[in-house]
Length: 73
Image (cartoon, rainbow, N blue to C red; front, side, top):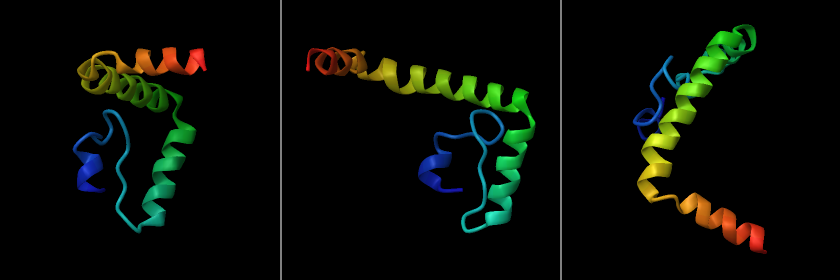
């Protein structure tokens, strides 16, 4: 539960937020993911869409430029 991260991650929409320094809370969130494939799939899909819309498209496809350079090397 860090401001810089929760400005991107919305609990139960595109990730799970846990209390800082609370290992039980973290363990509970991990167990929820382990036990619920639908939750994992929904959060992963939503997170991927957020990254695509908010970061990849806003930087004008720079990821493709990096990929091109990487492949050339």
